[in-house]
Image (cartoon, rainbow, N blue to C red):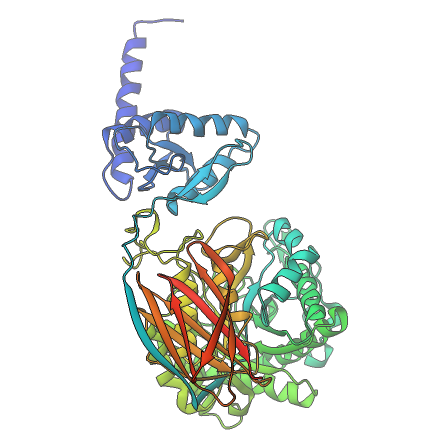
Length: 618
């Protein structure tokens, strides 16, 4: 029914909508909203008065890959939480229409298209919508023209007169987040790929809490009572909801099955585990996140870990090589976590070490798995162990993570050199047991699509695979004296800052890792090589193997063709090297033989490339 009050009501609604748009504009973070942004915001607020619009700030259109046109209204990408709507810029109106059509094609899953468009916007990537129901992320091919390379020369020397660390292994962690991960892990061809082609020689898994009922005495803890994969027995009940206080431990069984398959292919693969959290009832805070291990439960915890060692051996045939008492022990995480003070860490190491020794378990302990970036903070934990004569013998390996915050990867020349300076006098092997790449996609060069994209947190150019995998691996080996280097995830369902691969498809990260992992094998010894260019020019490390093989890995970080003369002073002479190369257009390609004449090998390193020389003494 119409009345004279209708125009007044409409006027109030218009004023309300205008006020909501203004409020949204003030709430939006980053650059101020443009007139084109406000067009989209007004539509959002009309549909959802509680909406919280935010600018994505993407420089490139997720459909065309071209620069965003600020005069065109952005696309609304609603997020799952807090009524957030991301305003994603586009280059043309037609690009917005493509996204709208994809939304219509996927209306049974309203989050599918907003999720992938958001990922593209946040990582300066492009979405291939050729199949609207199955869009895929891909890098934007908009790199600026490479400088015309100069032809320059370099002279380096490899010498066995000076020897450094013995290599224990290289690899990744494995964490099964979802059904897709499980399906990939279960593929025999994927298992063979990472063992026989990539050359993975060490793998890490998350030792997540096994559920079992609290017991009074440590000796009552038995692996036979461990519950996983959907079991909720033994989990505390939330009194308000009368449901389990937290979800069951998922994902660990597919990881163990995967690792068992890898060890069958190569029994020499070292399997290491990091504890994410003790059983919840052993902590000061009952639950997933945070809390500390209660002192009265130290003996229980040690027995529990001993049972874990037996559990993976008996059920999966896995020989556990080493164990970390706690992953990232300074952080309270929303997922399984536990925090320690230095003196608590030393006390726990001592109890675990004694228990393992008493029960005849030949498993090494490593830690503290805090950040390399914060060297003095991390060394507090090491010093606490080293200052305790009863604990000192049990922490056999020192270990850190190559992050600044558990997510943002770091690992510069200086950072690695500084940390080694802090720990070298302890005389123990050093491992970097987790790190990640720079960019979320598989780009090769730094700086993203136009060579200028910077990381929001650091302000530095986003690193491509050459720098983030090749460079950081090199720095850890040459400057940090690392005996092991482990990436975070072996694979992810889509491009991210966490995965070495996407699904079962090798990319640039994979091939750079292969240049190291396949040709630098466990028990090899790093020998002197230089001069080293650090993060510029020609960088190199060299290794001698027990079977009289020699490996030299060279990185050319410059835009020049570098004719490099390598003088070889190894303990055993090599007459010819097999030569492998990864560059913008090559993927660990076999590029022929490099002969040695008069103790010298001469080869040309193309601009921005990784080259591996591998040969055996005759």
